[in-house]
Amino acid sequence: MATKVQILGTGCPKCKALTRNAEEAIKELGLDAELEKVDQIKDIVAMGVMMTPALAVDGVVKASGRVLTVDQVKGLLAGASPTTA
Figure 1 (cartoon, rainbow, N blue to C red):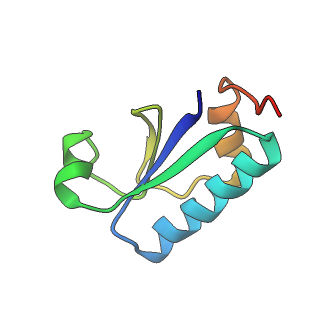
Figure 2: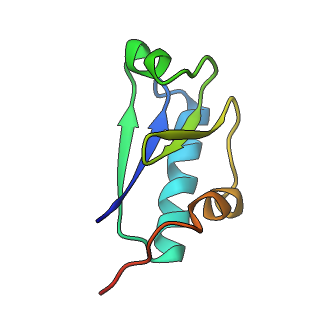
C-alpha cells in the first residue's frame, strides 16, 4: 500500500519548494508514495492547518508554516514502507 504524502498550500513559492523537496525525499528513500497537492482553503483548514505550506503523511499533519528540507522530509517519511520492486 502506497504512502500518501500531501502538500497543503495554495501554490505559493514556499509550497512549490516543499513539493520539490518532498518529491526528492520520496525518490531518495525509494518509497512507494502518492504525492497529492491540497490547494483548496476549505480542505486545508479542515485538516487543522492555519499556516502553509504544510506536509501530511497518511492524513496526519507532520509540519506546517515552513519549508522542510529534503532531509527533514526524509526523517518524517522514514517510518513509511519502502518500495518493494
